[in-house]
Image 1 (cartoon, rainbow, N blue to C red):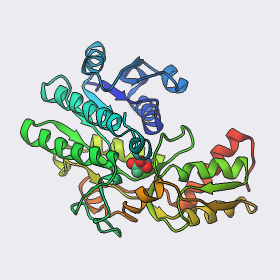
Image 2 (cartoon, rainbow, N blue to C red):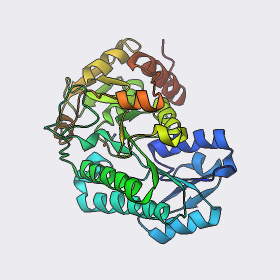
Image 3 (spheres, rainbow, N blue to C red):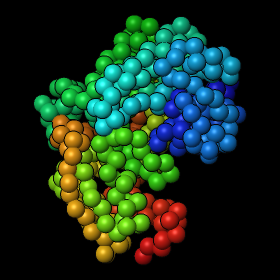
Image 4 (cartoon, rainbow, N blue to C red):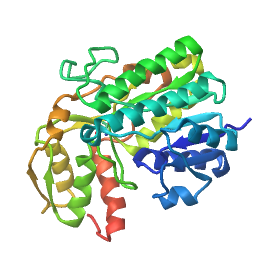
Length: 320
Ligand code: AKB
């Protein structure tokens, strides 16, 4: 039987690209996109779309019942930087949406759940280089706290109620289609837009802040691969470490400058520096590579070519 999929938070940065990828793979009528508003017209017009408030159990359940959904990708979340400005709102959205979906799976209404975690689960006492799958986790942001607690609940629902929930600790995700929404890693997207439109960029992190990052195509591939992996291969039910590359703002500036020689950068760290300083510099994702054969395709050079080409088309700028 064909699976009927619901994406909650489908107008956001990852949700919107996931919606397109799943619609291409499973047919548009089998993938219902939903969000709190209809701001992304490509998502709204390319298949079934519903307004769903992830914080409201009935709103989620009514949509699941209406379309006979069996698989939910819960992509709605308040990210690290915005979460620090609205701690209780971040807690409310990130935790209640997860409980609604986990409880619907526990009650047998749906069969399978994807829920994104993040490198934000780690904190200042975590080993920074090659951060292991299992290690000290003392997150310092509300976003990180919700992700760490969420991971514990995912594992709990799997162990105690047999809920088939799968999760990835996303690094910073870089993409050109949709702008990111309030994260600490957002600079790595802003920089491409500014390089093309203004040839200069003021970075809100310091030049030497190394963070784990990934190009969107790899993130989508990982998400779908994990969800399609045989149940017995998914050995971690909290959340998988996942890595592709790590770089600093200076590294990214130099990669872009190879294509735009007169591009300039200045550094003016703000409150997001403290968040970035509490996160790992690089991630050990051996478990994902062993358990469900994860492999990334994009490094900083290949990603930069793709970003400049696609955004260049959007802004009408040709890059050598
Ligand atoms: C953020 O910066 O908050 C996110 C994340 C790393 O989860 N991109």
